[in-house]
Amino acid sequence: MSSARGAPAPPGLGEELEALKRRSGRSYAALAHRTGLSSSTLHRYCQGSTVPNTFGAVESIARACAADEAELDRLYRAWRRAVAEQDADPGTGTGSGTGAHAAAESGSGKGVDTGSGTAAVTGTDTATGPPGARHPAVPRALHAGFWLRAAALLVVLVVTSYATAASHLRSRSDPRGPATGAEAAARGGAGEQRLRGPDWSATPRRVPARFFGLTLNTDTGRMPGFRTGAVRLWESETRWGTIEPDRGRYDWSTADRMVEGAERKDLPVLFTLSGTPLWAGPPDARRSGYEDSLASPPEDLADWDRFVGEIAERYRGRVESYELWDYPSHPLHYAGSLATLAEMVERASRIIRRADPSALIACPSFGGLWTGEGRETLRKFARTGAFKSCDAAALKLPPRKAAGPPEETVELAEEARDILYEEGVVDLPLWNTGTDRDVAVAAPLDARRARDYAVRFYLAGLYAWHSGVRRMYFYSWGSTGIPLVVQPVGGRPTEAGRRMERLFRWLADARISGCGKGTRMGLAEGAYTCRFERHGEPVHVYWTTRGRARVTLGEGAGVLRHMDGGTARVRPGDRIGFGEEPVLVEYRAG
Image (cartoon, rainbow, N blue to C red; front, side, top):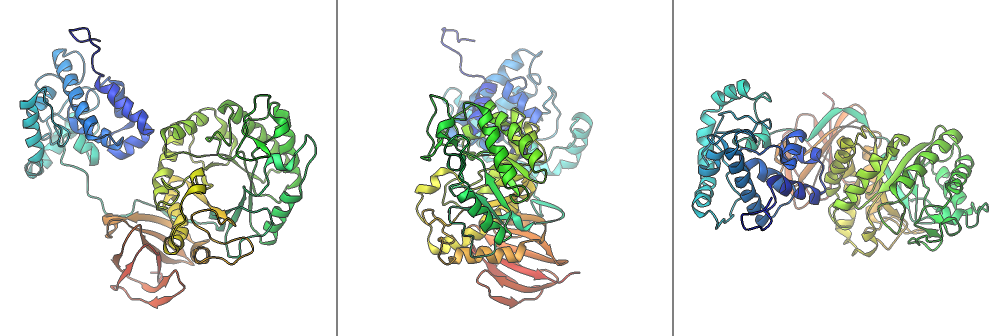
């Protein structure tokens, strides 16, 4: 489509929305979660088959995709063009000029987007354009829209008085029923629901000790000097290229030492199979970040089959689980096709299950998931069907930056779950195997943040329990070259390591029942809580991402425990303070 002078027409509304969605890397399911719109409605908007009757729906999608003010301005113009075009052709779009077009021109239309090409009179449109946007091409209309937005708070008071009648009309004319939450705003309603209660709750589920894991960054066979629940072998000189330096010649000395060390401590082992030997790659193979390994997959997958068979037979009944490649979304770890990786996963899974039916299989740990490219790589791998061969999805679920607050992993876990769900991978446990590569160059944390972040790493994982997170492998134990050190090999645990152990003693084998945060839980913004049962009695953990907060204790409160080992007696009605250092409150049953 071109303009009258032959210049290309500006992108349509659907094209603009689809471009924002692609840039954000978010799935339709993830956007539905953030906007309150259904996935099918979002799909129609982004494909241009339906035009929203209010700009509020467009703005909610744009905000969820992190659009800036200039992009909102452009979206508003695209929406107005789309509304004008559909009014000019009543046979297309969502309605006639008496509905959507009136809303576009005056901001006072009462059309509600139904996502199906119909409109119902339900209330006043309170979002007619992006906040603060200037539109020189149509100054009068947009100036009016700007002031109408400023008056929206007053309009809400009027709309509220008609809520009962509007709900009745909506139930008769809108097959989706009453609008709620962000969808109410998108349909012209009065804003999001105000909810009270946890973000999620469920029948109490046992938190197994192996949830609290560590990746070992040592080849000595030494194990952590504090209580933990599981270990992962990587950066421990146990790569394929180290174990089989020449075809058919194996050096098991380091792997045996590591497995035997874990056995002495009764720690389940996750053995990562990764790193093609130098002799096994194709002529044009790409080197990896390790001297003894290639990033390219083996030229002959029979070599992979043989290696997997050897290791599964050797450690039958001794290694609890296998991870089938580390960080394949980074070119220094894997430089082959996803189809080849999927075939390697399927072949290895069959071989391990024949040799050791009790062993668990974790699919490759994809990383870079804060980027659209990283999320798209995970999505494409899911489409290969390889996840059907695995018992868990290993993923890198770090904060946005290596030294960022651990709670950011909750959002990333939700994103990963949405991607997998949208691609048909349902109910597969997520195992967080650590961080991205930037951890190696990140500045060290100060002592206070280190001790608090170490504990909150696991608490964030527990908060993400509802997204399917079932294991957390802290990265890493034994190294002193990362921002958060928990124990040098041969040295004593740091305060961060000691507090990891205390949390383990608090919560290993407890039963988690729910988590919530902020004002919904009667807490300050940035304050978190998770609820557990231990020995049949309630246990609540409280912490913040920054600063201090307070909470009034409920019926049955008896003991307050601090991360430094201190305890205090408390009673119902006591108001306690807490901060970035988590605290635990024990309640009496009943």
